[in-house]
Amino acid sequence: MPDAIEAASHAADAAHAVGGLDLTNLVVLLAAAVIAVPIFKRLGLGPIIGYLAAGVVIGPSALGFFNDPEAVLHIAELGVVLLLFVIGLEMQPSRLWSLRRDIFGVGVLQVVITGALLFGALRLAGLDSIAAFIGAAGFTLTSTAIVLQMLEERGELTKPNGQKIVSILLLEDLAIVPLLAIVAFLDPGVDNGANVSVWIQIGTAILAVLGVVFAGRRILTPLFRILAATRSREIMTAAALLVVLAAAMALEAGGLSMAMGAFIAGVVLSDSSFKHQLEADIEPFRGLLLGLFFLAVGMSLDLAVVASDWPIVLGAVVGLMLLKAAGVYALARVLKAKHRDAAHRALLMAQGGEFAFVLYSAAGGAGLFDERTLAILSATVIISMAITPLMPLLLRFIAPPPAPSLDGLEAPENLSGSALVIGFGRFGQVTCQFLLARGIDVTIIDSSPDMIRGAARFGFKIYFGDGQRADVLHAAGAHQAKIICVCIDDREATNRIIEVCKEEFPFAKLFVRSFDRGHSMEVLSKGVDFEIRETVESAFALGEASLIGLGFTAEEAAETKANVKERDLERLRLQVLEGTVTAGRNLVFRQPVPTPLTTPVRESTPLSEETAVVASDRDRVPTPTPS
Image (tube, rainbow, N blue to C red; front, top):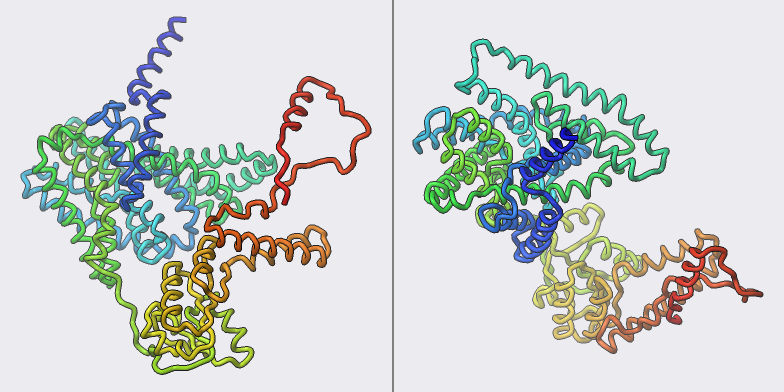
């Protein structure tokens, strides 16, 4: 019994050491995220800064809900682990092999070049050689979590420049292993003369990698096949988490990072037929834990250090980020990257990362840093991470997107035709087929040079022009056209074109593509001759085909389609007339409530109390509104 009491006491101490992660703390974490993230997204600053700011507020330097952010950060690193697993699922072995030059070529060069620049700067700042080396090495390791999250949010993860950044991040994740070995070697309290464990660590790491690859190839796929046969989603989710955490634990035991273990497991399973199921099961946990990671990073910022040594911290943030960005940019340009791609890479990778905390903590424990230096360097890394989500805003000024080349494009000039089509995307192309099939003289204008060049390969003559400008429409012959078809997918631009056409070309009929029901109401209120929502006819066709697929006859399906279409048009007419989308609600079909086809001969009698309760609840179901 005393042993049980002592164990409970130790468990309580451990919970307290983790910052007291009880129900109250969990509520605080969730509330901080729920409040901060929407506000920062509304301000255009992105969710990452929202998480970081919320972490600062609830951390020990402000409101003090958490006293040990390091413990929270250790748990939250699982978010980075899951993120790397999902990325690994999208990275087939053949694709990863094609990136080997970027990983071991560009990655190594970037670590060496930026590390040398940062080392020189820290030496000039007064740090001794060992402290400067470790400080530079830590800041050289970019934040995998922040950069990958930003690439994913912006849809750049699979683009060429995004793939190069991913490759460099993978190398930096690998670099933490030799760096930690160097810190251990420099530890004055260790007898390095008899230390031959470096080769043992390398061998252990290789064995751990081979073990994960073998398990993924020979064990996991048959295992998932067996679990899938149980048709239990909870078991599949548990198995997905087990795979990720076991791989992470195996590589951490081998001296590598947990994130690297998860990434390798994802790559091994990327060709599996269970790939998409795994990704769907992991996704909710990944998002929550990654948000928790950013919260924990914000908690780790020591505002007292920033306040007392703010000139040093500010100088370190600006100086180290500028130097690292310059090194990344210069290397990218030497390797023939375009100016904008190089600037984009430099701005995204200018910060320090989460592995800096691991390296700095190890160095501090080895006595290679004093406490003040450790606090200043840690604050510098955290602030640089917090600034990074703002960097894409600078890209617009440093490297604005190139203006599209207009070489070989013709602007409309003194054209005429029975029909003018504005916009030659998917919608406009189909529309033109009807007109051309009847020999109608069609003038087509579009504002996308790439679209115009692409259409030229199929024999279409399209002119470059902005349909929102009256002079362009005049030159395109809108004043002589019998009909103007607006086929673009930009809501605001469509409204502007309608206004210009109604004012300048009142005798031309306006046929307009609208975006959704609300836009249809706007368009119809402007007095166009015809409008159609871009997806409505497709939905009608799919609904009709669905009824036929369920066994209804073609005549029954067509009759239902006509009924639904008539109701939809009447509802839209009422909505335009009343100026509100809630008008005509009685015209919408609703989910039916099952009722008997014939009246029962006698009342049903419940056979148990539970049945009686269910029956009484059923009787209280409201009857549907008549359609």
